[in-house]
Length: 194
Image: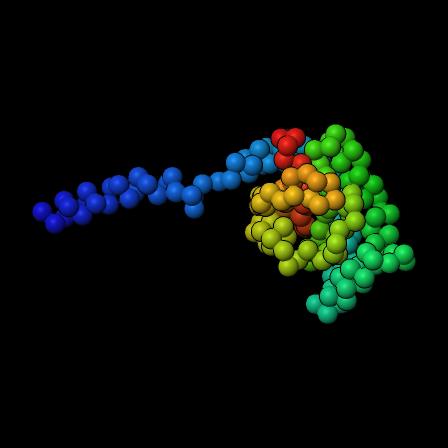
């Protein structure tokens, strides 16, 4: 008798759990994943992307945590200065040009994007970011550290500079020859265009 009462009591709970707010996916997540799949992922294996990441991974292979912190502090200081050697070295590279072209062809859907290396440092970007090191943020931790098929879609936020609602979608980037994760990309999308 007690077993049948317990079974009856458990059934409604099991039916409710899948519909709880904790398990519900935000409504923008699936459209963001579809946008990534259709508009971004097809060119992530382009040599312009892969070669730039691999070159920076090799260049930064010996960087210590203190050196990464120093580079990030330099970047943050340059954001508010007129002399921008580190920022200009990234914005002026061929990957940044490639990303800017991809952003332009998105007809306003993409508000910014940047590629990160295996340490979370910017390799290329369409626009200046507020920091150089993304390795302490979900966009890198929830993609690069997770594996080759990792996708992370962040919450919707208002972009103060453009007054648009946007979300950032990040995905791990792999070497097409080996399947090894070599970096990640973050794409900020105007959610009203989805």
